[in-house]
Image 1 (cartoon, rainbow, N blue to C red):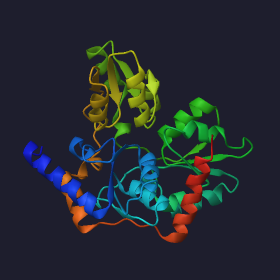
Image 2: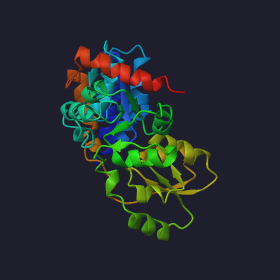
Image 3: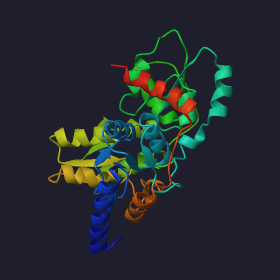
Image 4: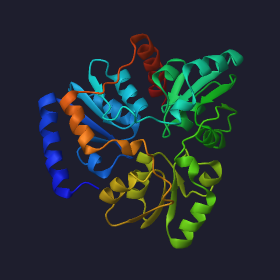
Amino acid sequence: MPVQEDVLELAKEIARLKRERNAVILAHFYQRPEVQDVADFIGDSLALSRQAAGTGADVIIFCGVHFMAESASILSPDKIVVLPDEEAGCPMADMVDAVQLVQKKQEMPDATVVCYVNTSAEVKAESDIACTSANAVRVVASLPEDRPILFVPDKNLGQYIISRTGREMTLWDGYCSTHDRLTPEDIFKAKAEHPEALVLVHPECRPEVVALADSVSSTAGMIRFARESSAREFIICTEKGILHQLRKQCPDKQFYLASDKLVCPNMKKTTLDKVYRALVDLEPRVTVQEDVRERANRCLERMLAVR
């Protein structure tokens, strides 16, 4: 853990460099607390990219993982997009690539391909429409009922969508390695320790975990639920980084992580020092080839058109 004085000094330098570079810093809810605290915007991945696109910034420093920085580049092709740690990837996003998806599409030529935003730009370019964990049910419910659906890559989110919509879908065999670790036994143990707490679950968790939830929602949805709920205690079933914002926004409430397994090593690769270096060097940059960007952007635009 960084020494507090060092954190404050580094945060000041980051603020100075940010002004010099006309940069905006984005941080996902799963980032380290000190990284969240220097960000201009904190949130879910696509919401962050959309916020950045609406700013006059020349540079986007995206404190997240690779597919998130790609989304920022897709929506802001005129801006420099920097990912502070180029090794910060997403194992679930890596479970499907464009070559594999094209092969599957050939097997299912009539299918509508729905991709979770947790995918590469190339996969988005080969998909018909994207979705987030917040709007996935609404997106799938909007699709024509006479066409089959191929959903990539998260089978757990896919199962949740099926349970909510009743739509049949072919699910890719992918999953979030962090959320998928959580088991019903973890929930039972947490409930035994905190019997009055409500259970808030991310839909990337296994169906048998989702079935034990008092509320199922995206990370932003969890924070909103906790803020608006009259309950005072909550068991949190998503990556531990969210606890920082939950405790800041609801200081009078108690939050318990369902399991100490809920840590994403890729989200924790970004440090304050790497944010500082990213502002100094404007590296490592993330770009998306223009033809891929255009097709991926259409996929995102179709999602944004769903009401």
